[in-house]
Amino acid sequence: MDAKLLHEDALIWDAHRDVAYEAPLKERFLAKWMVGVDLHLDRVRSGGIDVQVYAICLACELGLEPTAQALKELDAILNILDTHQDEAALVTTTGEALAARQDGRLAVILSLEGAESILTELGLLRMFYRLGFRNMGLTWNFRNPLADGGYAGRDGGGLSSFGVEVVKEMNRLGMMVDLAHMTPAGMRQILQISELPVIHSHGGTRHVTPEHPRTLDDDMLEAIARNGGVFCVTTVPEILADASGKPSLDRFLDHIEHAVSVMGVDHVGLGADFDIYTSHLEPSSHTWVKDLEEANQWPNVTAGLLRRGIPEADIRKIMGDNLRRVFQQVIG
Image (cartoon, rainbow, N blue to C red; front, side, top):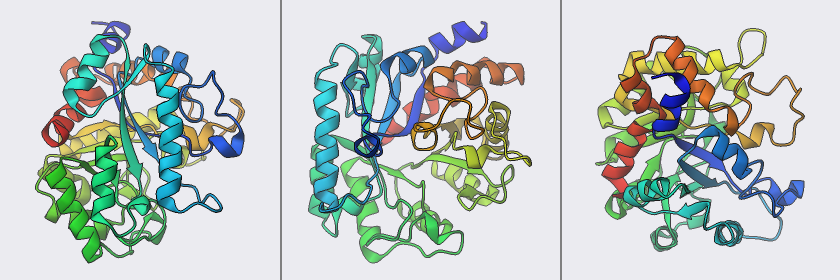
């Protein structure tokens, strides 16, 4: 099967994309955009994406508490989804996601990137679950009541006692725990506590990009694989930059291949995080990832993996089947 046919036939699952985060600031939440920044349906359709995890990542909006801000962004997302019911569907189970794909619609899974909006209340976690959220990362870049955030770096601390409670409650609910933006100490604690597989929705490997503070070393990749989880490679330009500072599709493929070599092919997936880094820049900017600038370039990944001699069955796993498996195990 050639690259085009393989991409069209395979399940394509992107584990991370922020929505609504920059839109109020950039005044780009327009009717012609489906959800969030730079997620035009034409790009998604051209890219062949079947399942998209949409993450609400809270900017510090003046005058709004984090719970209120998350609900405000959720309202904007749901209102727009309501006007595009023929093109997209909010789903809460893997079965619903596959049914949406069968209908030719984009399956949308809601996520919280950082748990600030649950404050210190397990009841708020349960309410967000009832509202449809099926994935959550405990932190973003800053410390919160659950754990140290990504800016704490490799030497940052782990989970608080409340953070431990949250992981256990997410397991009970059937909500995916996302390790992205956690410190290594926090990730290790979650992997010890969680009785279900986890994901790391958007990151890179330290072997390929040792200087970036949020790339994972081989020991952590191996630990995620032992948990049965999936590590998803990101398109964040700083993580994909080579020695000259230029990010490219080839560097993206390098991260995938290294993760596969360490974890095995059953534990590697894709989590783009396209928008925050490129939505407000001109296409000529050096910070765009060459040949992987946006969602419509996703077929280049399938073609690139084929060129590198990756078997078709393994490509299907990386492009979406691995994420389908773990989400099926956790959310049903």
